Image (tube, rainbow, N blue to C red; front, side):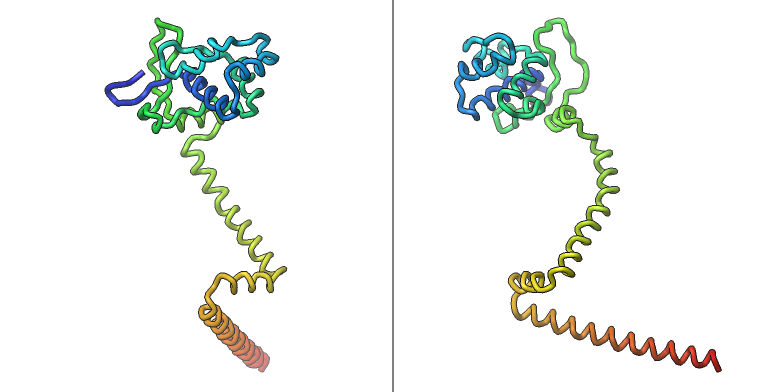
Length: 212
């Protein structure tokens, strides 16, 4: 169903399931009859080819097939995909325009007034992901720990495999730059050593003056 005011395509969750059912069946290379046969042990009955076809064509919106929880779990088991797979909303590139989800098929008197869900919102709801603000707060806490863990791992590798690390750098850094880095490193080592020696001398002089 088209929403002329916002130019969005409004789909039912059942239409989303139907689109994914057709997509996974085609990906498996199964005919509708083969898929119905594979589903029979899980559903307890066999869908006819016509019924399977009508289910997949629900996306067109002429006659929307209502899927229940038993069927969706059976689909996930037979096609070996997570249940959330069947709630992945069709992409706008499929000539549907921007897609939102929020209708109730098969209930003519139903008047849904809640705000439609975007593709990301429906997927987050199906997967149980936290909202954006919660994700930001989690990232703020986890980020520094992750950064420290990575840095610790790199430092451990450098200490345990200095030659391998040097060879890795040499393989990726131009020879001229590598020589310059080595020179700077040696210079810094000298400066640090001289500074440390000077500090030790000053400390020794200071101790002598206190003793006298």
